[in-house]
View 1 (cartoon, rainbow, N blue to C red):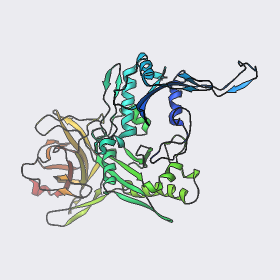
View 2 (cartoon, one colour):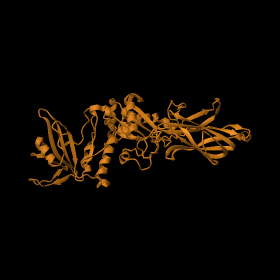
View 3 (cartoon, helix red, strand yellow):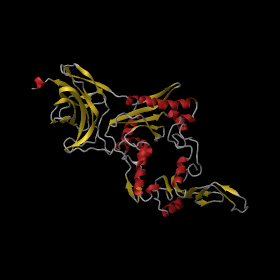
Length: 496
């Protein structure tokens, strides 16, 4: 009754679905002939498991006089195929339903199996008309992007395990926790679920709105046009700076685009999950397409709750709008001056293990967790004047002799000879680093300095200023690399 006859219904069940009938209408719209078949098996009181099969079409309304009384009569454009009664159509039932379904090529249910099969006749596939494999692949990826919260293994028996086949051949559905960038949304979802995130609240009236968490990573930026069509349709056409909105059914409502980090090498993904007590409010804020929360269609406190939700999310992400400033000191503890602003130049790549050739990944799949950030320190001033070194642009990933390396450009400003010394360490986050690696652990090291006077090796190089130099670093696998360069003026007499 609910699925076949009624278009839109009140959400009067726990974690119920939509109210407008759009989810059902899209099935008919996808069919060139506006027709679907519904084959279902469900438990009936006193009968056990029982099969049903019916055909349904949704077309244009029309007026007909083809009746005995010859009077003009309007029709809705809805049609049914099944067991025709005097004034309505019942579904085929039991063995008859199973037999007809089998004759139509549908997979029959096993003896103890329940479920529903929907058939869209003559589907409208657009540009994919002659490429069913691509259609199936897009469907599999779309399932992952839209249904990943209910696909997670920790849901146990309530977990959705989707399968997609074309011509009898299975098409793999991406595993969300192992697929970039969905894995970042999964991590954020688990953090808020396990109370490792933040509870967002409205202060007037005081009310808890939901739980929020965000996951950020250092990445190699995805190459243009490498995102899948499913990702683009979801609204995440590249590296994420988005928040996934959801409520009690834990289906994706929307990937809300937020402020970018200012660095192409830093991405973040968050999840906001509304509290169950306000589920009716958030559901009422959804348009018929269920893909947003619109506060304008509510009033009073309910409107306030939705509007405040978006404000609180933006407040949580304020840190991504600013740069972090760090300073560096000499071994004597004397400050050399304020370091350059932390550029956010965190370059990550999917590097191979230390003992094997490393490859640079720009396709967006299989991201590693390694990067670089650099600080250039002000140099010293002597009788000859001040010499200063500053980073130019952001660190970049290059390939050198079959290995992935980090390249940072520096500008040496002033007059005279300068001694540049690099210090590399493993970064542990925004403002910390690991100067002493554990025993046996790989460490980043300098491969070379490229200067106008030629290439030099080692941690130290000497150049004449003004000049431009490049520092080439081999990072340790799966780490962030901190690059600090200090500058000291050299007297010609001392150098000689």
